[in-house]
Image 1 (tube, rainbow, N blue to C red):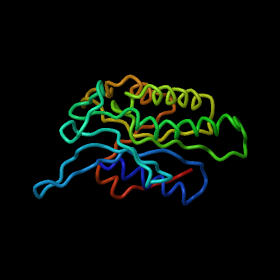
Image 2 (image 1 turned 60 degrees about the vertical axis):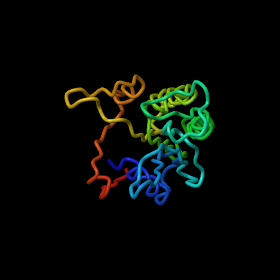
Image 3 (image 1 turned 180 degrees about the vertical axis):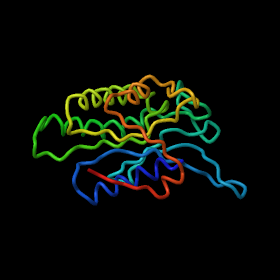
Length: 194
């Protein structure tokens, strides 16, 4: 629906305006061309500040030449928890360290942590879940930190829950603002800051 495209544009605009300190990562589709069409074979995690830095998050089991024993699966995808952890966790950790170094400084730029996406695959990493919960605690304690994240769509039209505990908690947070992203909105977003 264009969530990743929108997040990329928001990050670029935040960098251009230089009003905040922003860091984070995207989850990009990995596609393979086969027989005159393209098919999704997995996902990579990509650092926003260094888009050339990426690591596999998940791959279709049928394209893997070797599968690590006991690797978790989500649907048809085998999740590479270790490579995700090595790239994604330092993003959140750096935000926590910035907040610790100047906890309530009035001169500090607001800190924005951008995560695309918080979903089942990402939450298979216990260290990521732990750091994310710490970040949510810090958000409760400070007006100077913002989490901009994409989450899966609700399960049904009459049910706002996603069926993922931490995501449901995040969506129900008193300071959370939820926006549904359609492909029309992602193509022509109106981005306003402050």
